[in-house]
Image 1 (tube, rainbow, N blue to C red):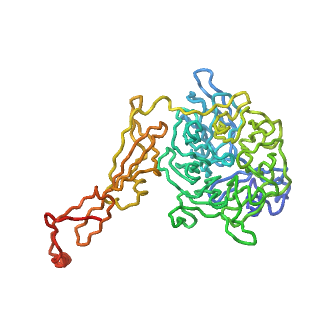
Image 2 (cartoon, one colour):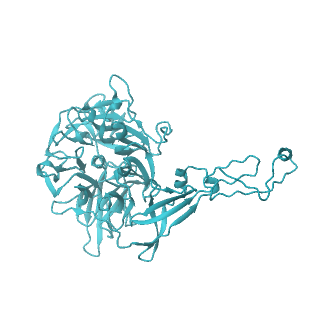
Image 3 (cartoon, one colour):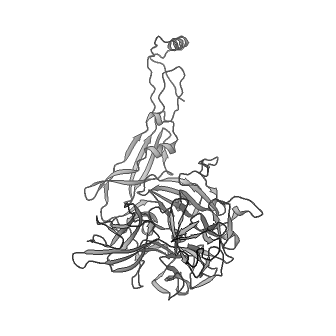
Length: 610
């Protein structure tokens, strides 16, 4: 039931055709001659609110993406910037706004003046009680009047579908830190601020399909057979989440969806804590962790065998290119019990934007089709070139970015609706296009380049390099750690997780001492057979090596007549003999009587431990 502006409607959401809001009574008005409401709000089960506007051309309500209409006047005197937020769309409850480098809070419609510190500024939209609702990154170095996209603070996706379809080599968190693959440093994972003042290596792993949610990063580790890894955003607490070989990883609502290449590319899922439905862990006899198929086998057609590529998670639905059926677009709900085909044409690089699915045909021609399967295919005036397993495009803020097959794969853009002229943005032959904030991360011949999103084609892409700002590590001390007796019987994996330090103290060239993260080489640890393991670690961002010896003692003998010894290290164990005293209690006297015939240890006795 929908009430708006005094009008009353009865509507429903068609699960068969996706979350498409329709009126039971068709397009007729329900109250005299009054027009239907131009806007309605949809309250999702997760508590999020989504705004829809009536689209007369298609006779339905179309979702409105969050955005703010701003006016930026850069300061020419003393660097004072004036930023006004004129209007906010699709952010229910929006009342005020604030800036990261100003203590002022103003109502929407007014402006804030402040001294510019950085060329970019974080804009936060607030509710009436000043609760943050959405954020955006604004370029304040140049004048700007127009809309900027907003990200909900309750955003549940770890990366955009456009980036994931382009191997997900870059992502951004809600604090506007960028996580990307640095091709200049052995394709290791880096973290940087948008200003570039902090640009630091956080892992030696080659990460693909990067997702950032909350305090965690999730990715497919190409250095370890594409297994799903997770770690903290500073590079600490790295761990294997799932042993499946995973591609097109997308994190949504506490669940990781992925194409399981260990099982014919089928669509799988696993919770972000490593469990599956019901909270159990799915381990095989070897102890390896696996996810579970999204779709079950049922009916005349085995729906669980779909080879899923170019995964898009939109609300309660998952869209993908079904390579098992001629690369056609399919969709299934997250429960896996409703599945349908969207189109009958070859579709690679799919990206869902509003009511449309954009894709590249088998020849690379860019087209779009409605996600509910109605209407005909609409071709756009662009053709992409094939890279690796398919064709790739990326859509942001009404623009479609692609590598133009008709011009040597060079970077172009065209309006999302196909209108206007296509524009060349760079002479760089582009393989993959990732977009974070106001920057494109372009992969060309295995190298990473950056390019401003608002380029007019006159700016050359910048090659990403390795830079430690000249402040190198001068010295770092090797470590020797002894495991506590009470932990001696734990598995080596448990001991590594507890005792190997996530960060170590290092001495820098500028005479400071810093705590920097370490990547420990667990696979190549050395064991001397006497309870001592030796590890080599790398200080991230600097390449400095450090060694750590982990000594595991034997369990101490207890003081009863029944002795159990777990002999982890014979050269490091201690056997202690103590005189046993007995009290007047019945239990002590029974034990004393029992031990009368036991041989007492005397000086000169030899105790052998096997």
